[in-house]
Image 1 (cartoon, one colour):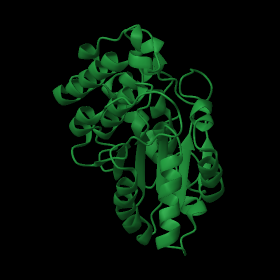
Image 2: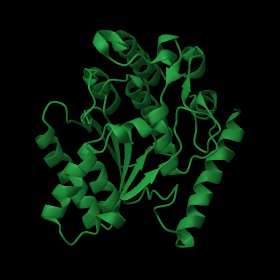
Image 3: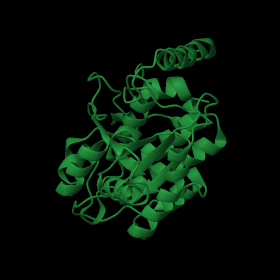
Image 4: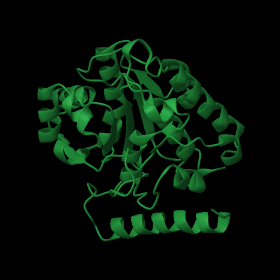
Length: 281
């Protein structure tokens, strides 16, 4: 995509967002994220599919764009449910991608909930809202919202927490009481699956090899993508972990990133190539 076209695309997205806010549209709709006061929680299960690693790289790529660089976010690793299989250790990637702006729920779940709670509470105190991109299951989200109920019982979490899920399987391996809890106590959105193209959300899973060196010019971003690809190839299908066929074929899978696109109102990205057409820099 030529730079002029790209600028027009991003400008139109921001203009549509401005119109929605001006008209007082409900923030629970796609694209309702308010970058002035809201918080994006990017939660990754990393068990046992390695697609989370590519999704991390996609998120950092978006956050490196000047139009989205000011988004207040926090990432969580190990936000998994009751699925079987081994964990995919993502720590080197998370550190390279997010610096210290992430929490390790795999290492200590309860401590992670307490840490993220301290990040969320000032957002709520400033009339902000919390948007959770659930790249995994809802067990961590349920624990976090319960902790907010205990500390801030006056907060209507049904209005202030927006949880976005794209996967039937993620719902199936969420602890049932946790899934029921978030559906009852958060603004819960089940969007079309990010693994498929043409269903209303971007399809970010493709077995086709992409020469990232030709698409990404930023050395730091290229380094993060390469690290994500290397770790994914190292653990994909190993020791009983899920074998992601698209990644095994040398392609990419950042399907979990479709939820972030929904939250930010990026509806016009069709697929993997469309993403890099927009964010190749």
